Figure 1 (cartoon, one colour):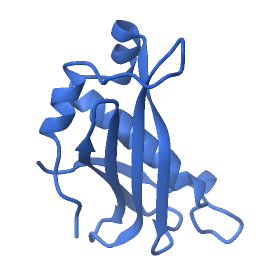
Figure 2 (tube, rainbow, N blue to C red):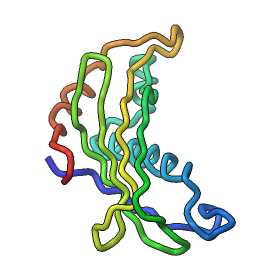
Figure 3 (tube, helix red, strand yellow):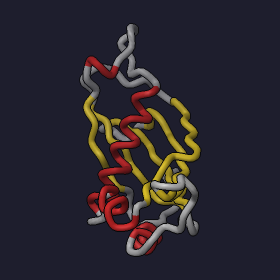
Length: 140
């Protein structure tokens, strides 16, 4: 399956004093891209909370910053599902420019947890099947 693509524009508020995108903003963009990928699958995160009292939380995030992004650049966050376990999802998220050059690469592990107990819980259907259908190898 192909990657979910989420467009991002670099605004002044995204940059540091040097005019380069502040490192934490890549994490914000990745979060938004994950949320929108679920919404585009017809399974918004809010529905997971409403129907099952569960939500997905970041357990681990690794970021490799490859090339700085600057003000007004158009970027794309590409999200791929690498693996789906009983209660976890592993994702690859690449931030690329319009030419496809990597700016940052993220590997993120999400865990499904109960809202009340904050303990790991199985990912319910149809989220589990939909995520499994999205599994693809990481981009080169």
